[in-house]
Amino acid sequence: MTTHMTRRDFFRRTAFTTLGIGIAGGFPAPVFCQNLNASSKLNLAHVGVAGMQGAFHIGGTETENRVAICDVDTSLLDKAAEIMPDAKKYQDFRVMFDEMGDKIDGVIITTPDHTHAVAAVAAMKKGINCYVEKPLAHDPYQIRLMQKLAKEKNLVTQMGTQIHALDNYRRVVELVQAGAVGRIKEVHVWVGVVWGGTPATTDKVECPASLDWDLWIGPAPMRDYQPCYFKGNWRSFWDFGNGGMGDMACHYMDLPFWALGLRYPLTVEASAPTPADKDFAAKDLMVKYEFPALDGSSDLLPLTWYDGSQRPAFLADYGLENKGSGVLFVGTDGVLYSNYTEHALLPEDKFKDYKTPAQTIPPSVGHHAEWIEAIKDRSKKTLCNFDYSGTLAETVLLGPIAYRCGQKLQYDAQNMAASNCKEAEAFIHQGYRQGWEI
Image (cartoon, rainbow, N blue to C red; front, side, top):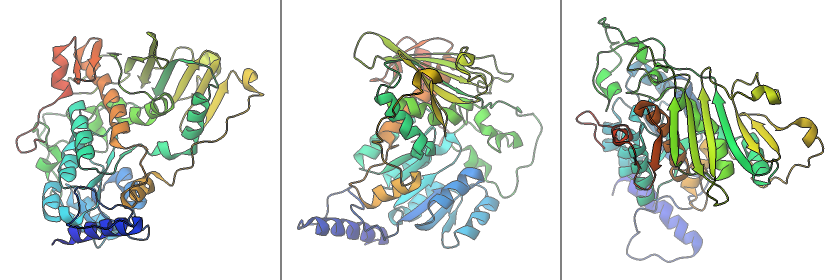
């Protein structure tokens, strides 16, 4: 029996012993790590160890055993190994999962967006719990597959929308759900981030010896190495990311999704200036969604996203013209503004005597800790599991898809299709380079 099966069997035995249930004839798969003692440590792996995200996730999991680390660049891998000297090093996560899949309890995936799903699906097929950075995947089909595997394998999942763990979002959710500004009529979300900078050139540039370019490209169409694809600028290119919206919308649209219980939109329409390069993702993008009414009526709930230089036209009416990013809930009795760390009921005079509702959403133990605890104790849940966060991420990715289609999409969520636009299928379910299919 492998080391990992021994760990899992031990965790399951501990769970059933704790519950006072006798076991005969083995254990039903795939229920792993139930009610693991909190003092026990998980065996975790990291895929992608570079930059702020890599450092953030390495720090967030330091309470556990890091048994494997993977990055396509050996210079970055060697630096991470200084922090995690006991972890086995890999450049190819496929090799890592083949060799160590039965020894890994959970994996944190922080690669560029185009390889999120390829890594996550490979892990989940091995029964490994997944923490994946936003926007979870590169297209809606990948997200649905990840949701399906998570459910079938009974895995603990979390998307890296860390702001969800802050107290400010909890207080805003309570205010919206208490009816502080009445019935919500519309929502506006804006973020000043811009991606879409330096294009690739025709110059031949030598790839650094430490970087495996073929592995970095992964499932995307092959092209020559260019420095412009690094330092986060891969988000500027459709083959690797989805611009500013792919970068930030899961963080900010998370708040209305949580507060209003949103799921899939009925329509999506997008507009932006034509990019300077056909491979560039759109910047200064505005996306208009229409969701089913919250009260079950025939009315629609509009939500509008703005990035780059785009802004809601009426921010000055509420003194918000200098807020570079935010979420605005427009209700029948006022508006509620929020960003990551602050919120306000407006106009201020109207709400000066307002009594805030009781706090019903408890503080978070931490976004990583929530995932780790839920793996150890299956009675606990992650708030940004793939069912919730996948629906949010799919909605986000429909914005760039609508822009690329050049028309308003009528979205059939049940069939994951734009009923009025056959061309959308190529963006909803993108292809894979040979050898990288999922």
